[in-house]
Image (cartoon, rainbow, N blue to C red; front, top):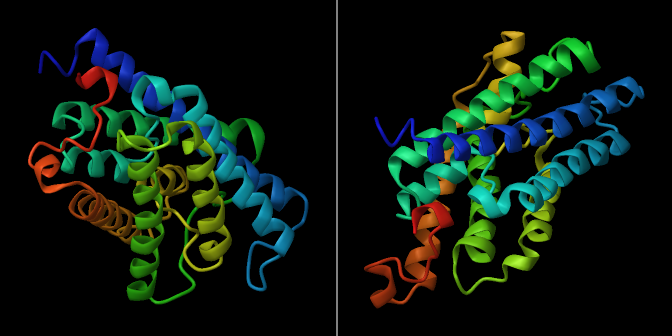
Length: 246
């Protein structure tokens, strides 16, 4: 409990809160802009609207990593945080703190968008246009791509961290191009929770927790098993701890 409320931990929690707030505000704000411009966000999906939404989320992640990466690694996503905890790269207490910050940041972003920027019913709410089993598989695959890229470019000490914001932003961008018409391309339980809570729409909400978390864990385990030498895996030596953990 002492570590949970320590000044250092609270600062890192605040960083994840602000980073996630920025990402969700930009992503959902882009959805609002596309809606305001009269672009169709329903089937048949407007290509311009799809690109606007994908760019909003991709650039939101890109900027979040640039600004907050040096502080916490800029997870902005409970699935990413859980994957780093599972890999041994983050303590459980720090992970819980990150997730709390992320969820609060996402909720605050949606409240402000809803009351100050765009007054659109169910803005940002994720929904399925495919059966739940296919939707779950899609979210697992999309999040696998995302978390695997994060491990390869940021968490692995041999990765090229300088290119990480671009690589991760592009993965989020392309994942949205692929799956916005199908599941909304969440990959992030916090991004889904904010609009669901504010607008009271919980349809198939479990998919947006189960899919990203499973995908993130599979990506973390796969990366460690395949790309860390056995001697390194024993102590996770191919991974680098974030500054607060060293």
